[in-house]
Amino acid sequence: MTTTHVAAPPKPRVAAPSGMSIGDLARRPETGALIGTISVFVFFAIFGGGQFLSAGGAASWLNVAAELGIIAIPVGLLMIAGELDLSVGSVLASSSMTVAIVSGYWGAPVIVGIVAALLLGLVVGFLNGLLVTRTGVPSFIVTLATLFGLSGLTLGLSRVITGTTSVALDPGPQAKQLLGTLVAGKFEVAIFWWIAAIVVIGWLLHFSPWGNWVFAVGGDKESARTTGIPVQGVKIALFTASAFGAAVVGVIQSILYNSAQVANGQSFVFNSIIAVVIGGVLLTGGYGSVVGVVLGTLTFSIVSQGIYYTGWNSDWAALILGVLILAAVLMNNTFRRMALSYAPRMKKKG
Amino acid sequence: MVTPLLELRDVCKSFGATDVLTDISLRVHPGEVLCLLGDNGAGKSTLIKILSGVHQPTTGRIEANGEAVVFRSPRDASTHGIATVHQFGGTFPLMTIGRSFFVGAEPTKWRGPFRRFDRKFAGGIAVQEMQSLGITRVTDGDRLVGGLSGGERQALAIARAVYFGAKLLILDEPTAALGVKEAAHVLRIIMQARQKGIAVVLVTHHVTHAMTVGDHFAVLIRGALAADFRKGERSREEITDLMAGGEAMAELEAEIESYTKEGQL
Ligand SMILES: Nc1ncnc2c1ncn2[C@@H]1O[C@H](COP(=O)(O)OP(=O)(O)OP(=O)(O)O)[C@@H](O)[C@H]1O
Ligand SMILES: [Mg+2]
Image 1 (tube, each protein chain N blue to C red):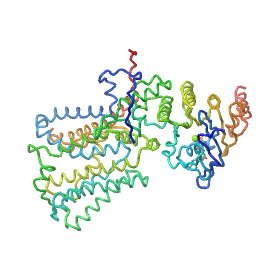
Image 2: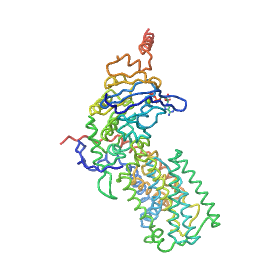
Image 3: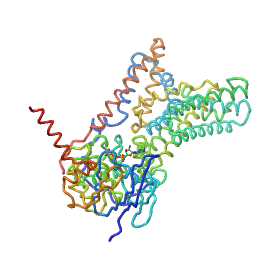
Image 4: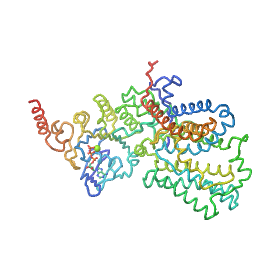
């Protein structure tokens, strides 16, 4: 599918590179998100004071960001490819219940529970992808159905098997170390998994040849199909990845808190979309970046945690988020328009 | 006689009970521009979709270089060297010129797990190919396609098809939304492709454009091939009437004129 070129790169008359100009910055999808992150950080640094800036303060929003980020990155990729995934909330709940039931209630080795939970995520994501690509029903509807269906299934099965909706788990030291410990007593180890996800998926989207397909699929499905790229395969892979991300976070939460509840994770449904959209990904697909999604995730977490350091009533956090979403999307639209109209000034040929 | 690049034999197409195309036989030769003319709804786009593998004929067959072929998908058609450019260039507005040029055939550098998209090479080739078609205003492969003009987008799509070795280029109303100058650019690019020995199938509603570049004309009226002639065999008036679906345009024009006169009284 890919070609390795042999010819030396040609030397057409191209605009002379002149370092990072305002124009270059304006045409990156994450510019708006960067401004957003810096703004809310400065805002809470001022109103939240030293507490917000302390290691403890940083840990509080980084921990939120890490769990959200592991889900938001694949959800963002999926959105770039033109699809939504609302089912992440139930996937998270079902995977955290799976590891707790398999390894806690039934007492199987914790690795068995983890593998079962992750497999569950892969299967649900694959089914989402299969349903969307085969039936042509919009992913909003398909994954909404999965969100409800899987949540009912999780609740029902948990009650049938364990008689309760909350199951305890003793993950043992190794699993704890790897997935559920607090580094330096504050920072969730999930932060490192998030960083790994950023590096790997960032590479895949922006540097590997495969990333080009994701943008093409979201940019124009029909054109993408005529170029011969496997549109359905790309989508199925991305749905699978997004559910896998949610399953990973489900496992992390069970191991971190030594227990699982069936109601876990529903907040991630909207929060992941908020993070992705604040991060400059176009809701209708074809445009966005991993760095943008990371910044959107940070912005979301800073606002939702920063409010506690201001001494104000935390009821106001949702209001700030609402205003922020609107402002961020308007700003991202402006930057996208600038990117579209941007053309380098012609340099005199030397 | 030389074997045609592509030949349609008695192709019919119906969607359910409606017959859209009936008994179409056509030949496409290398280095020739075939103009497909006809009124709105005559079946031009449907015919093009059969040539490009989007639809399959209900009856009849397609031959490529004298051998029967079946195009089950656009991918099948493109392996036979058939490239289709849809009205708006069929490209990706929010991708860079370099990235969109190479979708599905990404150039890479480095090896193994670090094999990566070669952005510089992609942008360089895309810009070079566009410039070789006379689009000199485009100099930066990192610009977004959506920022190009309509003509530049058409040029990008045509450049892409030519670069990947298209033998037959199908253009559905490439000049429809373009100003005089941009349209002229696109027509010149069509002539350049023809000179390279590429066959072109051009759909247009513009008599002048058709007469400027066409070697061979096929007129569809309500799904049937009403006329099939070569350059110089019909007058401009005859072609205009045929394009209007066989009605005498002169009468219609006279009627329009009478309204103008009334208005002036
Ligand atoms: N998928 C389809 N199902 C049913 N009817 C169709 C379908 N596609 C096209 N048609 C019908 O076939 C006829 C020819 O359509 P087509 O798009 O080929 O016309 P056209 O010559 O390209 O017209 P225009 O110049 O307006 O683009 C129309 O009457 C249209 O309604
Ligand atoms: Mg048409």
